[in-house]
Image (cartoon, rainbow, N blue to C red; front, side, top):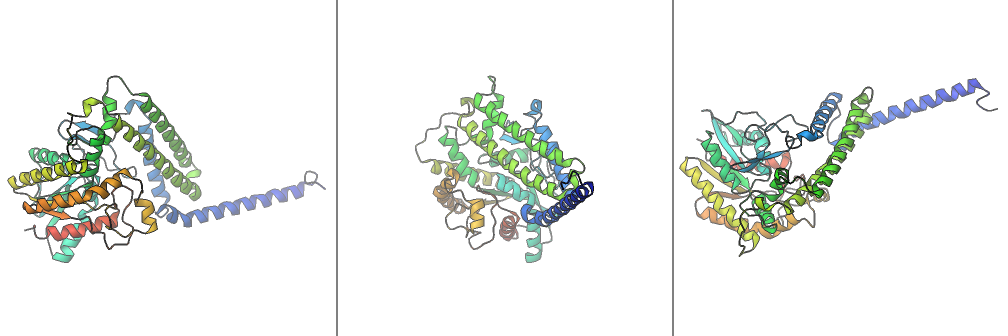
Length: 436
């Protein structure tokens, strides 16, 4: 007897199938709930997931507006310091913080130019992205260590004057710019080294003057400024870029609809796929940035630089002299100056690495990594020269030497909150002797 001729049996089969479907769906939802934190590193919350998703959708829609392509850029040219972060842009996709009028990320939304208060010890932070992240995350750690370990009562305020990709003399120039604009602080903390060595050396490799801003950061902007429009390669990159954005927007918009947004499984799938797309977009941007820096127009390369020494010696020399000039400006304005050589994972024996951290932090054939391996000794040596000239220089290249925890978050130079906490502890030890 077949099922079609037996309606009662057919109905039972449909009901059974329906119950199996409901059970499978429930099991999938339950498994997704318990697996969410393991796979994403965050506890599941409908509210948090929706807020983050709506923020991503908003950013994607803005980035897909081709008429606003230059408006949506992360950087813009600046007449004095080369480039700044674009005021109003979002530095972090899941954070509502925007860059202020000076192109700086100020998590605490302090007004710029900053005016210090009597109960504060204000510290201007110079450098590239490592310094920028530290200025945004390290203040609470420094205050904790100063109060708990040394009994310091004054509140430390970090004023961010750092920007991703900055290298000397951009730190020097921004300090002058800030002082002439009316900023007030007690000390200057310069955390740098990696960009000054690596990005300046890449400039030389590509025929860009080493004192000029990083070719990797001004390359794309320079292409947008050219009167003859974008070249074929740039158009190809843009086409692939917009396709990836479209796919990610379609995915997130689908999940945002009812009832799909109430599914833990779809929230998890959306988060993982969105991250995967984010990686692809970032890789595409990186490839385009490299291509743009290699084909940068001669108008943006600066005067021809006669290279008589090796690149790493030249770039570390510029770094040393710029630090001496920064010290002179601080001394003339009665400011304490602290210069720190940042840690980096490619420095030999600077950190024990688990397989997990190696996977995150080490790319064996990295051009940047090779420049660090070859060139950090130049910075350490010339940092010694700074010390001999009375400058408070500190070599932090080995501060993670005995720390087996995972601290690095990428294969460039950046570290996580634990890493920034270690840096803060060492800086607190320096600051304690400067605070009245």
